[in-house]
Structure formats: C-alpha cells, structure tokens
Length: 492
Image (cartoon, one colour):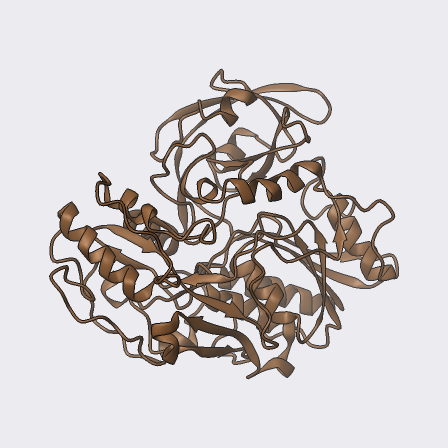
C-alpha cells in the first residue's frame, strides 16, 4: 500500500476508513478523493466538517515537523496537542527535560483520566493495517487463579509458530526459556519483535501430560475470525457463534463468509464472542453492527463523535448502513437479541458495537465487564512515530457514552480455559446458549477473581497498562492500532 493515498481516521482507538487489506472498500473512503500527502502523515477523510487547525508555526504544524530533531519534534507536539488533544486545556505542563519525544508526549497526558493515549512506531502501524501480520510466536497467556500463581495459554494464533509447535489453549506454562511463571510475569522474558528467535516452552495439558515445545519467531498472518460455528440451543434454535479478534479491513472477507454461512444455516440467534478483542477499525465495527442489526437500522445513528471545545464545529454522526457496496454480506434480519461474550480485554471497537446496538436491540452480555474506552484518536505521524492522542469521545443514538468503568454484564461468568472456544460446554458459551433458551443467567453466576482483580488494577495502574509491558519495559511496538492489553495478559 502507498501511504500517500491512505485516508485514515481512528475512532475509539480504531481506524475508520481503509488503509488497505482484504474484503472491500469503505463507503467513507470511496466518497472522497485520495489526497496526496507526505508518506509520514495520516490524514482524515471528509467525513465531517474539516477540523480547524492551528496556524503554521516554527514547528511545522499543522504539516509535518520542520525537522526531526528532538527540540523541533517537541515544539511540533506542543502545537498538535494544544490543537487536537481532547483534554488540551487540562493537560499538565510537558516535561521540558524529557530525553525522548515519547517521554515528552507521555508527560503531558491528562492522567489518570487518559489511560488510552500512546505512541507507536510507524512500521508497527503499517505491519498490522497493511500487512495484517505480527512478528513473534502468536500466543497470549493469562492468570488462571486468583492468587496469580498459575499461568495458562489463552489464545494461540492458528498461523503462528506457537500453533505449529503444538501449543494449545488451556496449556499450563511450567517455564519459558527456563524462566518460571513468576519470572515471566516479572518481565524476565525478553519481548521478541524480530524473526529468528528460538523459544522453548515446558507446558502441561489438562490431562497432566507434560511437553517441551520449541518454536522460532517469524512474521505470520493474523486470523481476525478465529472460528465460526452453528450451534444448537436446547430449544432447537440454530445459533450462529462467531469468535472475532480484530476489527480490520482485511477481516471483512472472513466476516462476510461467516454471516453467509449463518444465513444459509437459517440461524435465528447470534453469539458474538469478543472476549479477547481489543479493537480495530471503526468502519468495520459499523459493518459488523449493521450486519447484526439488519436493514431496519439503515441510516440510524451508529455513533456520534464529539471533539474538544475548540473543534466542536466538526462534531458529526456516523450511521448504520445496509449498502451492498459496503457490507461483505447481507445483514441478518429479525434478530430479536444478540448475545456478546465479553471480558476486561473487550475494548474500543468491540465496546462501540455493543453500545451502538443498545438503543435498537436486546443486548445480552455474558462474561465480565469490558475495559471501558469511549474515546478515540485521529492518529498523526511525525518522524516515523504515530501519536495516538485522544481527540474525541463517542455516544450512541440515545446519547449514552462515557463508560470508562466498562460496559456491565448481564451475566457474570468466569472464563474457561479448559475448553476450546466454540465448545458448547465452555462455561461462557454454555451460559450464552442457556440464556437463549431461558432468558436467565446460569445458577452459578461468578466472574473469575483474576478478572475482577484486573479491573481493580486499572484504577491504580492506568498509565502502565497501556504504555508499558507488565515489567515496566517500554513497548517498542503495538500488536494492533488502538488495541488494549490488560495487566495480567501477556502476549508475544
């Protein structure tokens, strides 16, 4: 992809129009001419009134930084944050002695309110949105007990080295490269972002059998749709079940195929599993919500965008659509309700979809409360760094937003790492199927203590939860633009 014609706007931490990749072209992107812009600039399409911009100063803003010296980049960042940052009038004075531009950026964030803004390398942005890939092994780990002494495998990317080596969801980690789970949690294990690094896992499966697995890091293709199935509820209803991991344009083809399979099977109920989905594209979020909502929602408000005080003339509404030129599959019609499986890792675009459907559908949430990210960015790059500074908030058609403590759950149900995702016996999936049958929560209705602890940790560790790894090591790249990683979930 040529970045010079990439038109992007990020809502709730998520890319609104296409930056390339599979499955279709956004109607937003196609409604505007592709402006020729410098390769290091990420710009917004004419989706709304043009944002007012500050006069050009010595820093070069609103264009690119006049130079990539640290001093000039700091001046550029001052102008940018003063103009576009949502809390521009409340942010602290920047640390003039900060050695790096990233430290300078971090020093002027309005924390603890702003636990969302971060910067990332432009190469990482391009890798995810252009290539749809990650460099590493393709696994994530989580605590399986309240005492945080047992580390288990939560997700394994199907096309990554970890899957090829035989690592499976539910495996208990005994050691990685000789480091104990406690060492791993404390940051002793190096974060791998390059190919060719060998790693050795000692794990134990649910039957107690121990295995030694060897894998080598490489660049691999991500699987945004992990699985889809047609399940049968106890009352005989056919239920579409979808595990969706990332809102990206390249996921549209797979999303469309899933919805076509659901329609062919005649599903009358739908479970969307977003428990590990930390974000992605808002146009894709609108696409998913539109396919769930049906044609009856065409033209109704999907999300309302509200900027800071000096830019509020650019506030606008973004509507649901049923356009076949936009959607990769026709909407499912007549769903009386939709069941979402959620957790503290459900964030950003995932929350946007759930909140957007509340005014129009019976929305049932199974699992644990979501992360709580009702804000968004318009990303801007300078000198090979993309700054994702919050510059607006989002509301649904009823004006509901500001869910900074997360969206609540209808039924609190603990995660179940002993079963594969989509297994009808997996605790949260079983609860969702049971709700479809009875319209009630399961008798045992408890969220895992570790997940509740994760929610409590947010309040005391809000900045580290996004800008650093669990050990406090500064991240050099993000696995996905706008994606949220909870403390207690470790990914490589």
